[in-house]
Amino acid sequence: MFSKSLEKASTRRWLSVVCLVAGCLAGFQPNSSSADDSFHFEKSNSQRQVVTYVHRVENNASRLMERISIAMAVPQSDRRQDIEKLTIEPQPDRITVDEWNQRVAHFTLDSLAPGETFRVRFVATVVLSDLEWLITGPDVGAADEMPERVRRRYLGNGDLYNIRSEELVRVARSLRTSRGGFLEQLRHIHDFVVDHIVYERDDRWDRADRVLERGTGSCSEYSLLMIALCRLNGIPARYAGGTCLPHAMESEIYDRSPTTTETFQPTERGTPNQDGDVDRVFHRWVEVYLPRLGWFPMDPTRNDLAEALGTHYRYFGRLPWFYLVMNQGDGHGLNEGLGYDYRSSTKWAGQETFPPGSVRVQRYATWKDAPSPDAEPTKQHKRQVVAGKPLPWSPFLVSGEASRK
Image 1 (cartoon, rainbow, N blue to C red):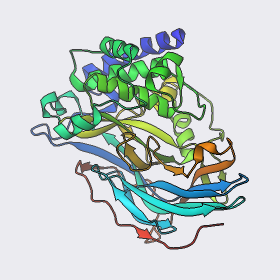
Image 2 (tube, rainbow, N blue to C red):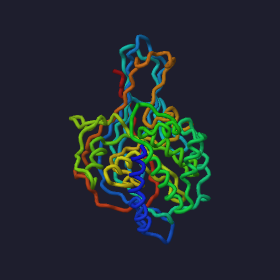
Image 3 (cartoon, rainbow, N blue to C red):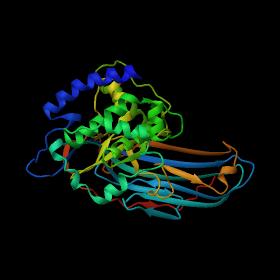
Image 4 (cartoon, helix red, strand yellow):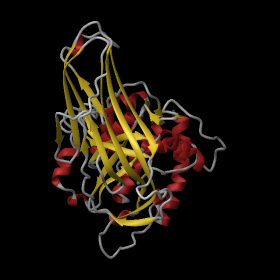
């Protein structure tokens, strides 16, 4: 662990000095309209996809499941993803919208007999794009420009953040810097997480302080630790998550790495087949709120792998086209029914009395290329710079097709 941290930090110290002097940390370029506070992004490489997300419950127990409830995140349009059509099956009992405009579809089922399954899903036709934030330090506002509602919600504690941990408080203080403003502070926190955590999935989400102590974590645990350290340094932070196109997610880093001759090999995340690419792992990353600019993405898990292959800060202020954002959340108190999940969840009466493994819950997403409405290919669109204003959420369709099997 120490050798990893020392080697990476040494390389990045040299890189960060060069970037800061050149005004291009994390690939940022000077704002084209420096006379005012307008914020711009660079949008490119638009791709049209059909993404099907499935949540499936299978009762393998010897007794009836009763009063079953399923909550499923409903993706929405933003400046990077344009949802042209969204169908939900079967028709949900209700759809809730929280104060941050995050939508969750809710389904209820009276009972599920042994051997029966129940499935819910959405099918989205969506145009996704690479989006890179084009900002430098002077573009970011001062701390007193932070909206009060953002402070209240995204500087607080949570079960999986545990920001009262003595060790987290100590580390957060050690990372504080008085130079460079918010972006330099974020770089310190980001670098610490990338240097001290090694990727490892164990199908559970531990608290941020335990992740720090252990030194390993999944993408969710990288994110929980980074959120906790940001909040302790006065930077509002939340997580975002969703499904990713499997082969694109893996191949982008290998194809663009200047230091490796390795080529992408299919992994457990999913492999292409006649039905499309299947994602069974999903992904979570971090968003922080920058005064005057809004929510800014950082993906410490992906940057850890990118750095190991020689590409630093590739996912600091950039989201690739092959992420479909399903939810931007903060655990309990938001996204009714999801808790800390960003995809979907299942609950039923007496859940704790069922033997482990007797009820199987599956989540997976399938990606397929979608034909353009005018039969023209949409890939490799001309690069464009768009004003950073939120786009309205696209309406969706709800289907009443039965899904009990």
